[in-house]
Each structure stands twice: as structure tokens, then as C-alpha cells.
Length: 357
Image (cartoon, rainbow, N blue to C red; front, side):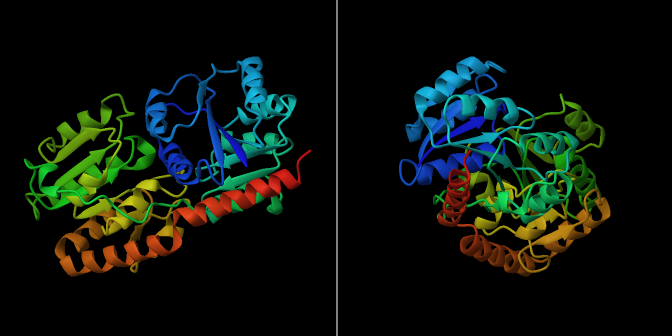
């Protein structure tokens, strides 16, 4: 089956990372994949795709005639689209290019107004939707009125083996214990809450360090607040890191205190696979991944007290860290395999082809 992926995003987020993993495992069989960057170039994504020998083409925003020409030449069975409003003109271009089926992706929680408007409109053009959490599928059904039979849940998958790294060479200048947060720095990801929690804990744990992996999307405002709180020597920022294994190997805890609009975070999957105890929030599909007190800890979004207490519990108990980390690792290895992710996508693609217009 030939699948053309259309991406509107710039840079690398959870959606891009999970789809690169999918293509790495599924191309060229059972899926022959191609990629169109339909909102201008994305050098970081092109670099990630290079080892896979997958064709990548670039189209400027709303250059629909050129997009239609590329799709017609590519002759995919299905066009798989990642965007908010753009899937409507993309679907029109794909149909004019003779594509049998179009499928939309909803990788967040589906609660943003722009996403709901987009889904209400493009449901008349798309044959199926793929979400990465049951919560998102429920939101799309109840709020965007997408029929249940057009909605498919494909949980993010992850490879079963972590590269064996020498953790001692990762951040030799830093102390312990270490908390790691893997996410672009922005208000909705909750790093500001982590600042407050770490500030409260530093007196009890004077050598505590927090490592942030991801791009700064606050134009420096986060780091100004960090300096104002006197935490410049406590937080270590790496920027975007294509391979987070070394940083996970040197961490004691992972925290992702998302405030809103979360699907099923790749970073939490990676942390659980690494055997780290993970703290998440009750947002989007996170509770489908973290079973509170069994495979990790959950706190309410925006709850600094709850986040502080959860971190304190883990910092005070190596036994609890090991217990939650091992249970989380086992859960991910059993329920979030790449094979299941591929099969769930194939089911959705086959449905779309069967119900093609």
C-alpha cells in the first residue's frame, strides 16, 4: 500500500517523531511511504528521514496546483494529512489528482477550537481519522460530530530496545538527582510549573538538577523567569536533541507537567521505556498511558502543589522510583509496540480505501 504523508508543521514535535518511527519500521513493506512538506521546507524533518531513503518533496503554503501535480505523479493509494485547517484544500487537491482515499491525523487532544472547526469541515472530504488516544477520538465524535466508524485509535509505538549508552559521559559536570523534561518549552507544556516545584524542593535537595530537552518557544521569557527565581545553576537546557537516550540514561525522574492539549506524548513513552518513573498530568491521552500509582504518577494540570509532592515522593524513595519505572517499562513494551501501531494504521487505511469516493 502506497501512503503519502503531508505535514504542515515546522520543526520536530511528537507527531513528526512518531511518524518517522512508523516509517522506519513499515517502509517499504507493508507501506511504501513518501512525504510532502506542504507548508514550506522543514530541514530538521528532512534530516530525520534521510536514512530511510523515503522521497521528500517541498511545497509552499497553499501552492495547491503544485501539490496536486506532485500527488498525481506519486500516485499514492492514501494521502495521510497532518494539519489543522489545511486538510480541506489538501483533500481537494488529492481528489483532483486521482487519489482514492484521504485520512486525517489528530495528534493533540482535539479540544482546540481551530482543530474542531477544521474537523467539522473536513469530515465531508476525508474517509477516516487516526488519533493516538481514545480521549481524542471521543472528543472528535462528541464535539466535531465525526461518525464513530470513521475514527481509529492508533497508540504511539516505540522500538523495544534502547541503545546501550555510557551514561557517565552525558552530563559529567552536573550533580544528582536529576529530573528530565522532554518537550519544546512553551506554556502548555508546563515547564513554568516545574520551575516553581524545583524552587520549593531545592532546600531539601540542594544538588537537585533539572534537564530540559527541546526548543525554546517563549522567546527567552522562560529563562528570564528562571534567572529571577535564582535557578540558573539548577536548570540545564540542551535545545533540540534528536536522540534523547543519553539524557534519559542519566536521569532519575521524568516529568511532563502538561497544562493542556496533549495527545499521547512520545517523550513519556521514551521515559517509560528507559525505566524512569514518570510524572504526567490528567490531560488528553496521558491517563491512558500512566496508570496512577502503578506505572507512574498523575497530577492535575496546573497543580504546582501536586507536582511538588509527586517529585518529593520519588526523590525520597529509590524503591518507589524503581517500582514505578519497571512497571512503566513493562507496560510500554507490552502495549505500545511498533507492530501494533503499524497494524492499527493499516486498519484505518484499508477502511478509507474501502469507503473511498
